[in-house]
Length: 253
Ligand code: B12
Image (cartoon, rainbow, N blue to C red; front, top):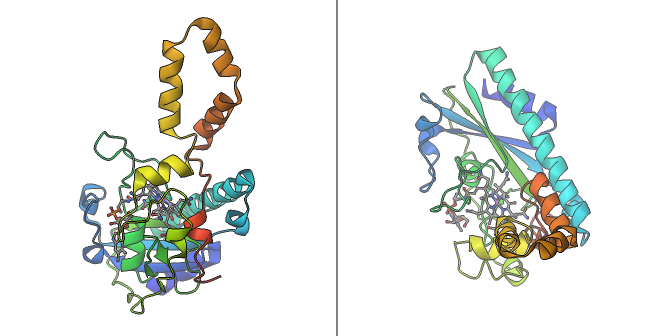
């Protein structure tokens, strides 16, 4: 069954597939998979090579590439779930590449319901690097993941035993926010402030100032280019303006 599943996924254009039995997926901060799909027995993790778009300094092109990737990964998720249902009468739930994320004061929208990095590592698709991203043996850091939670009884693939990060420190040195200074932990808020300048923090500041301003000032504010950028980010979703920790990593280039 594993071979059939992998063949179908690769046929969709997915670059690699790993499988992990539910007990082997251990992500300390994430919810129990049984609360999402009672009877979960495995996770099928899909890996996709990132486009070269992330190398450019042109942030419209860089983020445009990410949007293409997100759209493709979501389509693969849907097709995989339908395949598992059709062929194996399985229950399969898709795990999105990024959002929606649970918004709460505690997590500040930084905790996925399933940790795709922990799932990818447990499914034999790579291991954590100094940048806290998963490095794939062939694709290096330039890889994104999605997954399917299923009730299929599938054994785990073997983990990658060799450590893939060379500790060259390029990711740490090239992080403009200093978000990787502490080993084993990304400072989410530092990363966010730099990589998403038109994210939720900026939107809150904008609307707070708007509410406190006289009408003439409000009119000026919505005609200002800063508002146009916030508006665009609002419908794009999380719009990144930094890909440095990925693009500076020499592994797999
Ligand atoms: C929310 C989120 C963010 C938030 C918050 C990050 C966070 N909390 O980890 C922000 C906006 C900061 C962010 C940034 C980025 N993200 Co992000 N993000 C996510 C998302 C949606 C959830 C992450 C999550 O739940 N984390 C919380 C839990 C899992 O983390 P944790 O237990 O606290 O573990 C942390 C540390 O303890 C450490 N860690 C844990 N175990 C181990 C073990 C070892 C050995 C080591 C060394 C470290 C380590 O790593 C974690 C990072 O701090 C995932 C998708 C998903 N559903 O998983 C993508 C995801 C992790 N992001 C991804 C990417 C690519 C990025 C960015 C490069 C953005 C960009 N421009 O593309 C940066 C990278 C920042 C970095 N170097 O860490 C990819 C990673 C792919 C990969 N190859 O690993 C994912 C998997 C999306 C995807 N579909 O592929 N992200």
